[in-house]
Amino acid sequence: MQISNSINNEIAYAKINLALHIMARRDDGYHDIDTVFAFLRDGDALSISSDDILSLSIDGPFGDRISGVIDDNLIIKTAKLMQSHFNINGGAALHLRKNLPIASGIGGGSADAAAAARLLNSHWGINCELSQLAELITPLGADIAACVMSEISHGSGIGTNLRPLSDKLDLAGLPILLINPMVCVSTGSIFAAWDGQSGGALEIDLDSILYKAGNDMQRAAISLFPQIQDVIDVLDQQKPMMMRMSGSGATCFALFKNENDRDIAQENIEKQRPDWWFLSSELK
Image (tube, rainbow, N blue to C red; front, side, top):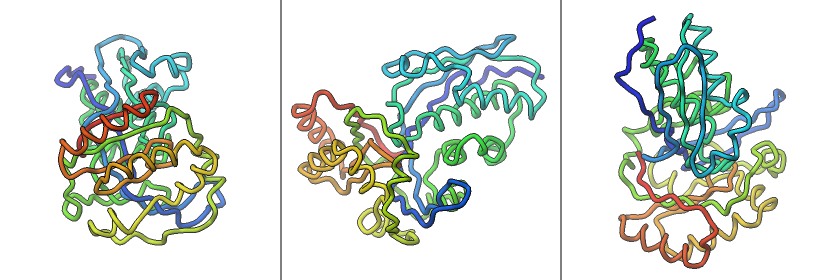
């Protein structure tokens, strides 16, 4: 095994669903979906150093929410899967700074696992293609493949069939504001509460994705967590380009034409709700 320290840090880019339509319930407990994944330039932060054993330490604003379940963390599961698949004998000391809320619809554990895979791919000198890496760790979570690639893409099936969309939806650099009302949402409970109404297959063009599509899980999420509607309402008052809940919630996002509009919106909302979580960023 050849250890490479050329990359010692990775960002676990926050994920949003620009649009999310549920196509059907499946017999295996999953749902067929039609979605557009997009990623922010910010997220959790992962670092690595050489070690004989595999370990994970965690800190950050939300680190205490997951620090007690290290062995069950997707980062460790990803590392062990890669060790086994690529016959890696050594270990690594991984450190996660958890900046993103837990169970919030913006990637979370999947983004962390994906960042770990990219980091270990370099550190252990594996250097396989990201598409191969994504395929390897997909069994650990339906949206991990998209998070490995961390590029705007169309997802179908259970979200693992990916098609890059950077040539069709050029949104890089667009200012975005994320808000979470500080509630943890169970993805399973939201899917279970889905009313069966589907937005149908997505039309992959900018106007349709931003203004005609939606999130089929939003109604169910609001019925269980009314705080999400509060976020939608205050974002609407700021007149963004568009706004929507991401994934199964409870994080909502709004896109703005420029950074000034975004920053003013955040300032206005923070005055009303200083107890909420905010992330001001740009699309990747």
